[in-house]
Image (cartoon, rainbow over all chains, first blue to last red; front, side, top):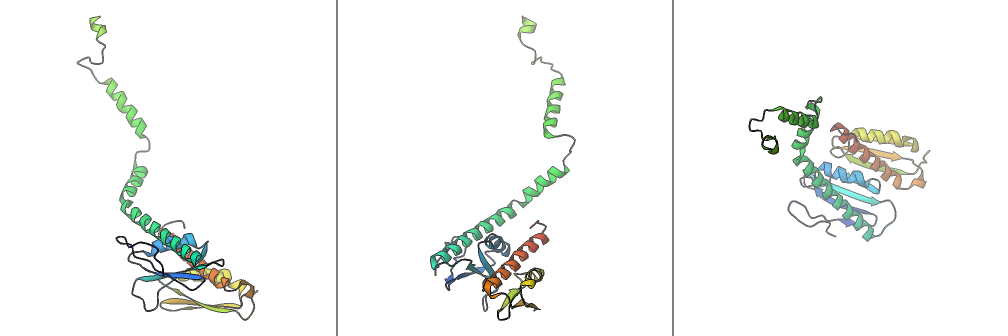
Length: 151
Length: 84
């Protein structure tokens, strides 16, 4: 039995058991959403065999992840594999949470990009604003150099 | 073509694997076995693989399971509007 992640806030302590070639651990779907598990599995299917299952007699909302090495390995190798999977899992959870928290501003930018007036870019708008300022009257003659009327 | 003597049963929970992904894997691996039986239950889709080349060993089943998982992820993401 080994710990793959510290119990820090929401993050569950992961434990795993090994039978020589496979390593497995049970995750609470409440803490590790299925999409995050999919994200980590998607990355690992090229490196090892991944099988997901609902543990028999387990609590509701639990997912068991079983990783099987493609090549012969020792227990340290399996624990390393599980540790890397756990790290990637945390990465996917954070990625998902950041995605959710920034979804509104991303939608705003997309809407702005798609529905903004395409005939006038922001640079054009700035140039037009400068031109307009130059054409404005200058009753105090601030723009006139002091030497010209007094020189 | 596979040989008689190898057999394995794998269960895919419906909440984790898409039945369409299982069908896709069956279509892809069918030519390398004597036969693949699929039983779609209310909670699980159970697949029985029979008669693959013993030279592939157990990894044949593992590759099959990986394929089902990969397709489940890809199809799920496509349904959510992503490319893969």
